[in-house]
Length: 218
Picture: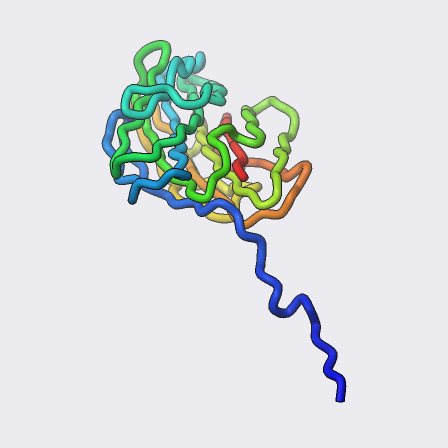
């Protein structure tokens, strides 16, 4: 008697880099980044708000005082406030903590950083990176197989509200920060992705203006 076996039943799913969210804090805080590993990439995602419609420029985003990749960044403002977002990464093989620091072109009301680690990562260089702000055309990003996407979005002016993020399935954090000028910031990721030439990206909430930055890794 012959038996027909479906070869897809036992086929393993897509296996890509393992993304771990390490938390959100102030620029200059120390984060636990887990066990040392030869293939551990640390990714810092930052956001800042100031009391002016002209956004600050992200001057640098460093890891324990040492630069990683050149930050992908954008900023946007309206009314009496503005936000700046950015992202950079670095291969950090030793140690269990990391202190990311974001420096801007001038003073800001609040400066927040989220930290992620990626293990099983072939290279520290993002496969693709995108920056978008209110007024730009719709954005897409290229994903290699197997891959992941990380994203930070921030908004200000108008009414604060939580974000709906397109392009990342897990929203790791979404809250408001600031004082006289306040921003809503969301951080998210997606992993276990097959190749996708134009994965749609978007960040929608009730703020008047918003911006986001996204990277892919594989």
